[in-house]
Amino acid sequence: MKWSMIQLQKFRNNGLTFDEKVNLDSVKLRDPQIRSISPVRIKGRADIRSKEVTFYLDISGKMILPNSRTWEDVQYPFSIQTTEIFRDEISGFEENTDDNLHVIQGGMVDLTPIIEELILLEIPMQVYNDEDEEMPASLQSGKNWQFVKEEEIDSEQKVDPRLAKLAKLLNQEKE
Image (cartoon, rainbow, N blue to C red; front, side, top):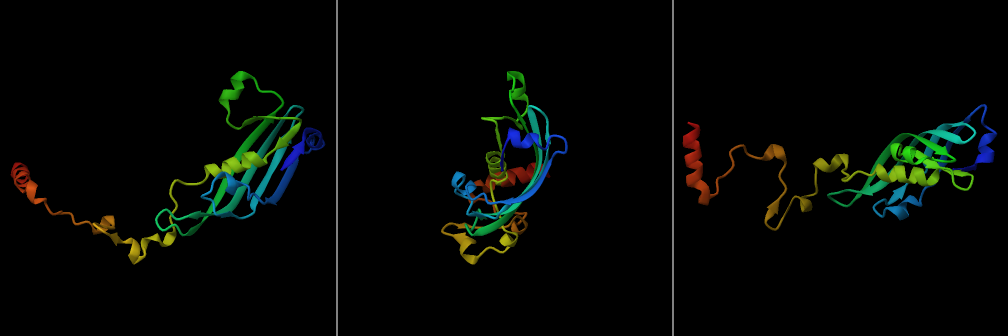
């Protein structure tokens, strides 16, 4: 998704609309946790002025990420809405005020690196399957530990025998 400013100026009066599917396998090189990514649908329009182009984008697709508990593949859909502005020049003040403001370099507007960055920002810290409620038996316990759901925790927990006298004292104070 790359255009020269000369190409874009042809659409100055009517604007540019597009709806494309783009292969962004290069995003897997930037983050190894992405196991695969479907062709990304990029739908949007561009408003073109003499020294500025504003893109209104809708980006959607699916990527395969590892499950945080089981390391199995999880399909993670994403949908991003953004507005990206490209200008010939950016003053120092404006540069710090808007993250979506970019400089046109070499007379070319390239959306691909920006779209890749937006997809990378969509990756959650932890990914879980909808079926994670039923964990495999091999992942429910191990040596000196056991996975317990919050609902299963008994409200009256066992008191450590070393702290039994302290527990009795606290119970007496409550009464």
